[in-house]
Amino acid sequence: MARIVFDLDGTLIDSAPDIQAVANGVLGAEGQQPITLEQTRKFIGNGAPTFVARMRAARDIPDSEQDRLLTAFKIGYVSAVELTEIYAGAIPALEALKAKGHRLGICTNKPFKPTQSVLAHLDMTRLFDVVIGGDSLPVHKPDPAMLHAALDQLGNGPVVYVGDSEVDAETAQNAGVPFLLFTQGYHKTDVASIPQTARFDSYSDFVELVEETLAGA
Image (cartoon, rainbow, N blue to C red):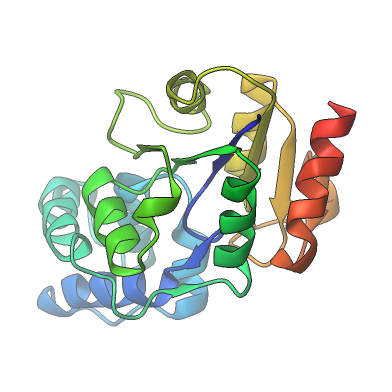
C-alpha cells in the first residue's frame, strides 16, 4: 500500500479566517489596523515566523519587534480553531484511502501544537499515522527533510505528496516524489506555472486521481 502525505492549511482545511483573527488580535494590541482575509491567504505558507514577518511588513512594524509579536501570535494560534473549515469532500476521500489500506500523514509548516489542536477539533487526528509540524525539525518546507521524516515513519511503499502551494511543489521536487496540487488553496501564482504531477479542484474524484498517480509512478 502507498504512503500519502498531505499539507494541511489550504490543502485539507481553510484555516485563513482563524489565522486572520489571531493576527488582527496581535495587531490590535499594537494599535495597528487589521489585515484582510486576502492578505492573510497571501502571507500563509512558509511557517509562523514568516507569516508574522509579512504581517509586520504590511503595517511597517520594525524587525526588532519580530520575536515579541511572534510569541504573541503563537499563543493565540494554539487555540485558533473555531473558524476553520474542512474542504468539501476531504474527509470521505481520506476515509476511502485508509479503507484501501494506504497510510496517511501530515507535513505542514504550521507549528505542531496548533496542528494538533485543529486536527483534534475537526476530528481528523484519527485519519493520520504521522504528523510533522513546522517546528518538529530544525528545518521547514521546502526543505525535503520534513517530507522524508513523514515518509520514513510511514514505512515502505509508493509515495504521493498533496499540497496547494508553490512551497509544496518545491518540497515535492526536492524530495523527488509525485505531487498533486489542490487548486482551491493558497497558491500565489497561476496553477499552470506550478510544477505538478496532476492537479484537482475538488475532492470528489481525488481517490481516483491518487490511484492513477500511483499506477503511473
